[in-house]
Length: 272
Ligand code: HEC
Ligand code: HEC
Image (cartoon, rainbow, N blue to C red):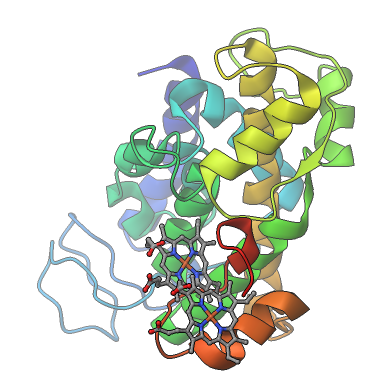
């Protein structure tokens, strides 16, 4: 296990001990605490059983998520990043069930699922974290908003570029490129399109450290955005704002029942 995780495990193990022995149950608000035989008062599940319901969420710091997401990208990839960021913070703040969730679970999503260039791994990892804490209906709204935001956002963000240039990604174990990176809008949730547009604009090819750093900053940005959305949702203030662009809406006025999706149709099809 790498130092980042080791340090974190150490840091959280004392607190989560308190939580798994029952002292922290107030924070977890009746949540099931796994693997210890201690079960929250409101559940009837057997000790050690996997909870079916969404896990408890507490407000998190988006800026810390940005830093953790960046470091985690360099450790195990874009999809691991936001999942690690959110779950590691919830381990510290809630403990209990979060200590039973393997942080490596989203590793497969790197490069758009095992380097297939499909869904951006950062989105995949963030969506998994959202689905852990939000009920299904809310997950759909939150993830759709996250994906919609991603397709129109110029990555990496000003915040991530500023931290990168200043060398402020404090959880990173190894040096990372500290230059200001050019930004690009993917107009797509696909890893393939997202990288292609940035590579065309920056001139840095896929295997370069600069391109990887671009995806590391993007991963931090997606983690931060996911936490912002979850905080708003938790506070009862989440409002979905994403709308498909006008052209896609016009395509869907005829194709809503024969085609799945909200992706910009003309990024792949000719209009007719
Ligand atoms: C006024 C209704 C309408 C609109 C608007 C519309 N389509 Fe279609 N589209 C159709 C019909 C009808 C077909 C033929 C269906 C079939 O062949 O089964 C079709 C076929 C297609 C096909 C199949 C390929 C082909 O040419 O046979 C694609 C791809 C497609 N549309 C994409 C789009 C895109 C992208 C847009 C928006 C830019 C769009 N459509 C807007 C009605 C529409
Ligand atoms: C990432 C690329 C991509 C995007 C974005 C995309 N499509 Fe497609 N679409 C495909 C592929 C690939 C197929 C299957 C191969 C084919 O038939 O061209 C397909 C198939 C279709 C077909 C059936 C074509 C046929 O021959 O029957 C229609 C209609 C269609 N898409 C409409 C849309 C509409 C409407 C949108 C926007 C909501 C959209 N597509 C977005 C790639 C895409």
